[in-house]
Image (cartoon, helix red, strand yellow):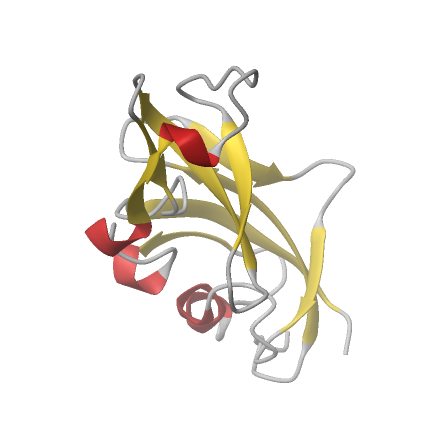
Length: 143
């Protein structure tokens, strides 16, 4: 039976968990993930963990934060004056807000603190700084 290699189109099932056992994502049962190895449709370190697997094989693949969503970065935390937001708009901790920047880009950020004078937003990915474990089964190699 052929082992998976870069360039192969494959089908996988997985359950992604954090250190505390919480499931952050899953693709099993009726919704497997189909991807081409080497196209960076998933994290390169996850692709590397799949290379060499054979159909039917099951493997736990651990990704360090740097191999997944990166480390948390304090530069992604921004404090804005409350006056930058409409006075009538209620802003709550835990809410996600889309900000438009002067370079034309936009970013969704999480409200982590609000008071009368300022709103503090976190632009880090929710899974930044965390190790991710993928309990993965290579279902098939399509090509």
